[in-house]
Image 1 (tube, rainbow, N blue to C red):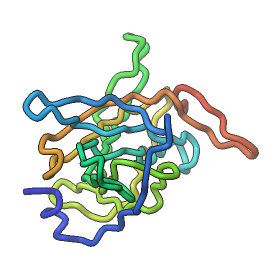
Image 2: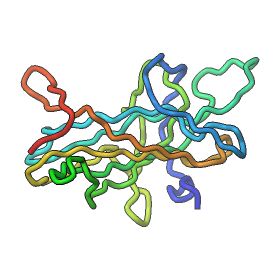
Image 3: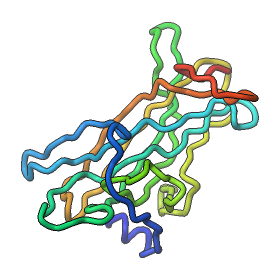
Length: 200
């Protein structure tokens, strides 16, 4: 069953947006041997807050993700994106293991959170215009887009982010990537403090 079918044809807001600002998003482009088309679009590490939740909790915001680029006729002027695709992310909690001196995956995973993404942004990634949906294990339900990890025990934490591009008529193969962000923020009275992990 396709993602669109699972959502039951819910109406989604998709912003009409233009060209990508140079250097806005990062991410590898993986080509299919069968089609020669890229399977992933540009994608960025999400913003991650270490102290916005009550108690020991991390808040992972939805990352900016672009649809996989697809070929189009250069003689046709495009206003807005030339490809809109279902994309998703899932965050997994990592905890520092002093024995191995690495951040190791825990069994704590956030849900898959999906939305329709364009293949370009004109003025930066405006995620406020996105309708997010969260996979509950049996259905997609509306979501705020962020993943919260609450009531964490004492220790040092990071997250790994899985990215997924669902196949569609213009990009017939699915795409995947994983990033482990190294920028985490603490909000203080006057500024953001950047660190390479969250500590509780």
